[in-house]
Length: 582
Image (cartoon, rainbow, N blue to C red):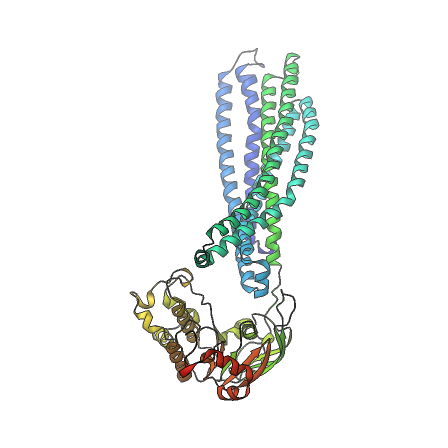
C-alpha cells in the first residue's frame, strides 16, 4: 500500500506533524506562564509578597496569543492530516477496485461479495483513521506525555520520581489490554463481512424472499449475524472501557501524591504555589495523553487488521492475466477446442468437461444442446477466459486464448446470459454498453434486430426510459431483448447466446433468429440451450451430456441417428410441433 502513497500526499503527511508539534508546544508553555502569573503577578513572591497586575495582564495577553497560535496550528494539522489520509485512502480504494475488476470468477467467489464490499468501504475507512492518527494523534500524545513528564520533573525532581514510579504501571496495563484486544479486530471485520453478505443477498433476492414468505427467516438470520458482530464489538469495547479508568486511577493517585508533596515543599520553601499548580496542569495533560493513547491504540489495532485485509486484495495476483498477443488476425470468428477438460478451481476437482474436441467456423451458427448441469455454460466460459482450461487448449482465430491480451480477446466476443444484467440508467445507455460511440440509428437497428424496438417505443420516453435497479421495471423477456441488443451493437466477431432467449415467446424467438441469419451472416453465432426449438435451425448442433460431446450434426441428422437427441425431441414436442409447456 505504501507504493500508492504519492509524493504530494506524503508532503501533507510530513507537514501535519509539524503543526501538531507547534500546538503541543503551545500547550506545554502555558502552565509555566500560569506559574509566573500566580507566583509573581498574584502572590508577588519575588516582590515582597506584593502582587503586580501588569505582570498578570502582560502574561495573560501572551497566553491568549499562544492559545490562538496553538489553535491555528491544531486546525492546520487536522487539515493536512485529513488531506494525507483521505487522499491515500482514495488511492487505495481505487487500486483495490481495479484489482477486484481484474479478478477471475474464482477469485471473486473466494473473497465473496460481502467481504469485498466491506474491504473497499469499512476497511479503507479504518485504514484512513490509522493514517491520520499516525501523523497527528501519535505526535500529540507522544510529545504531550513525555513533554509533561519533562516539565514536571523540571519543576521539582520529587514530582518526577512519583511519575517514574506510576507511569510504567500505566504503560504495562495498556500493552496488556492491547494484546488481549488485538485478535478481536480480525474477527470483527469478518463478522462485518457476514452482515454485508446477508444484506447483499436479501436486497438482490428480495423477490424470492417475498415469494416464499421468508422475511421472518431472513430477519432471524440477519439478527444472528448482527448479534455476533455486536458481541465481538462489545468484547473489544469492554476491554478498552476497563483500560482507561484503571489508567486514570493510577495517574490520579499520582496527582494526589504530587499535591501532598507539593504542599510540604511549599511549606518548606522548596517550591511555590504556582509550581504546584503548574505540576497539576502538566499531570492533567499527561492523563489526557494516556486517554488519547487508549483510543489511538484501538484505532491502530483496527487499522492494522484492515490494512492486512486490504493487502490481501492488493497482493493477490490475477489467476487469469494478459498474454503477449494483441492486434488483428487474418482469421475472424473461428473457435477451436483441443482436448479440453475442465474442473472448477474452488470445487472438488471433479471434471465438468471431459476431452472436448470441436471446431466452430467463421459465420457458422453453432448450437450446444444439453440438460441442466451438462456443462454447456462451463464450455463457453472458456472462450473469453472467464476460467482457464484445466487441460488442453482453446483457440480463437487460431491463437491460443491464453496468448491474447484479455481486452483484445473479449472485444472479439459479445455475450448474453439467461439472467440479463441491466443498470439503473436509460434503455439507450444500457444498449450502448455494447458500443459507447454508436449513433441513434445503430442503436435502433440493434434493438430492431433484437426484437426490442417495438416495446421500447411504446414506453412514454422511448429509448430514454430509465430502467429500475436490476431491470425490475421490465419483464424477463424485455430484459433479455435489451441485453441482446447490447450484444448486437458491439459488432463482435463471435456472438454467444447462453440460454438468453429462455423468456421469449416462440414467435419472438423465431423472428430474432431470422434477423440474426439475415443481418449477421458473417458473425459466428453460438447458441446454448436446453430447448430444441432454439437450436433446430442451426448449421450444427453439439449434444453435450455429463461434460462430453456425444454427437454433432444438424437437426435432421441428429434426429435420425442420436438417441439422446431423439429423447429430448420427444419430451419437448407433441402433436403439431407444439412445444410442451410453452
